Amino acid sequence: MRKRLLINIASALLLARWRQTLVAAVGVTFSITMFITLLSFMSGLNDLLDGLILNRTAHVRIYNDIKPNADQPINKTAKYASGHNFIGSIKSDANRQAIYNSDAIMKSLQKDSRVLGYSPKLTAQVFFNDGSIDITGSIFGINAQEETKLFHFDDYITTGNSADLNKVSNSIILGKGLADKLLVQIGDGVQITTSKGERFQLKVVGTFQSGIKDFDNVQSYASLNTVQKILSVPNDYVTSIQVKLNDIKQAPAVAKEYEKLYQTDAEDIQTANSQFETGSSIRTLISYSVGITLLIVAGFGIYNILNMMIFEKMDSIAILKATGFSGSDVKSIFIYIAISIGIFGGLMGLLFGFGLSSIIDQIPFNTVSLPTIKTYPINYNPKFYVIGIVFSFITTYFAGWFPARKASKIDPVVIIRGK
Image (cartoon, rainbow, N blue to C red):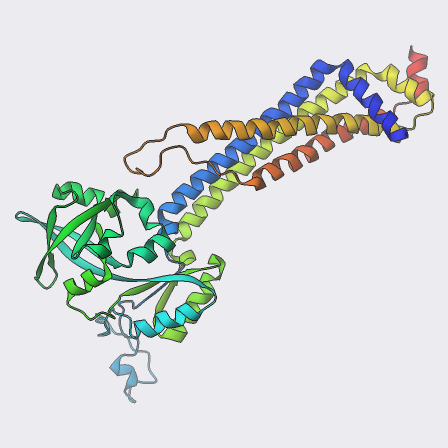
């Protein structure tokens, strides 16, 4: 009963100064609106930028690296075994780039519960013949179905269909920049020359655009069997196996395990793309910092308004205390006022934040480098809305606590005597 009375008194004080209350609520609403919009947009932008590379990068890449043999003959000689030998101009080891026992490795990966999926890959360095000019490029032999399932390959196809790589014999999907250089389109033929001087004719079944111009100028894709035929290698010849895990955080540990288990090199996504994670973290940190700063500024506005309200309502506070209300009761009244402003402004901020994010999500965003992106990226993560309302509640609570504490210490005798 007493609590309801305190709430009624707080409501009366709020309505008595409704213009000031509205200004405070608008401040909280604006802060939450910008907080939600900023985080949604920046998070969507992070997802877009990271997706250009990270979504198409394996969590663990199994391959054979080209490197010199660390165990040189001089180190095996008894005469020099105990010394420190300086060796220069060491040639790379004679090991081939292909992965040994690739079929057995893929069968083992299929049984690993940590693995979401895998996709074999084969790289061929070739020249694309354009009349008398040879354009340096590379062809990646892939399993189109697995690449689409695991690495969103279809999202970057601008013309044609990735499934045609398996349906059409000796077919190829060219990077947009490379296709423009060769002046070819779907149905045309391109001639390539391998590093061994062998020539092949391939049929264009599509083009792709990754958003990174340097890649699109040299890269192309064909089926795994087509590239194996170009290189004149057996059907089990692959240069890497792209592994995607159920939990990306396990990648560093899994990569080390695979290196020992399969006697190959293995690189995890965190090591290969650490700069992208750093950039995303910094952008997110900036977004949270700006949003929280806006909320704190709104909190100062509530603090100033409540201070003015206490100054103007000295008589009312004195009467309340003279009629039996304790200092804690007075403090509760002003805290109720602050929390009411925070909840109302926060809920309205969530509503306007969602609305503004939806408007931005509909704004056309057309760029040549990102043809698959049609509108500005927005991430509607519920976490942002929870953080917004919780922080709004905390900010307004403390903004009201200090003035409320001041009001609770007012001596009614001093106020009445002064009047």
